Image (cartoon, rainbow, N blue to C red):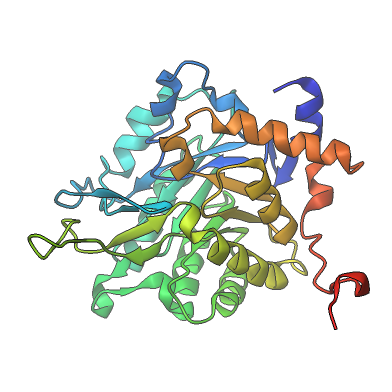
Length: 321
C-alpha cells in the first residue's frame, strides 16, 4: 500500500489500529503463514489475520472429501482440524511477525467450559483479539449449535468475557431465526464486536453413486453465492450495534472492491476476505486500491466516514409511479 492509501484505509477496531479494513478469514489462511509463500503476497496489506479455528485439544477433522466447488461458491467441511490451543500459543505464535499486522485467534468448543479454557489460554499470549466461533455443536445439549440459540450464544460470550481482557469478536451464524436478537444478547453478555456472517449450511450429491460428496454429508457454503444474504445480515446487525459503538467485520462472498464497499456502506467497519483468496491470492491489494480510489472520488478522508451510510429511503427522482 502507498502512504496515501494507508492514510485513507487505516481505522480503529476495538482499540486496535488496523492499516486496512481487510481481515483474512479464519480457515482460509491457516495459521497466518500459508499465503506468505505466494510471490507478491504480504500480510502487511491487511488490517488483521484471523487464525484457523482452534480447540482445547488437537483435532484431526472430518473424513474426506472436505472441500467441494459449487456454482459461485465453495462447500467445506474441514471439521476444525488443528493442533490444539496450547500448541498454537507455544509453537506457532512465536513464528508470526506481529509488526506486519494484527493477529486474531478463532476459538471453538463442544462445551461452554471448553470455550472458557481456550479463551483463557489465548489471553496469556501475544494475540491481539479473540474471535468466538459459536457455530459449534453443544455436546451437552444434544448437538444443538451454540450460535443458533441466543441464550447459548450469550452464555459462551459471558464465560469468554470472564476469561480474557482481550477484544472479543463474536462470529454470528446465519442459520438462525433472528440474528439481530442474538446480537443484542451477545452485546449484553460482553462482546466487543461481531463477524457477520459465518457460512450457510449446504450439501452436494454424487448422482451416479447417490451419495453425499462431502464426508461429513453437509458443509459450510461460502463465496459470492452467499453475498446477498451476508449483506442483509450485516445491515440487520448494524441496526443493533450502531447505538452501542460495536463494530462489525462484514464477510461473505467479498471478491472485489465493489463488494467490500457494499458491506461498509451496509454497516461493516471492516471486511473479511476468504474464499476469493483460493483463486486470487493477490486480491487484497486490488481491494485496497479500489476502496481508496472510491474514498478519494467521494471526498472522504477516512474509510470510517463511509461506515453505515446506507440511504434506506429512495429519493423521489428514483421512485416509479
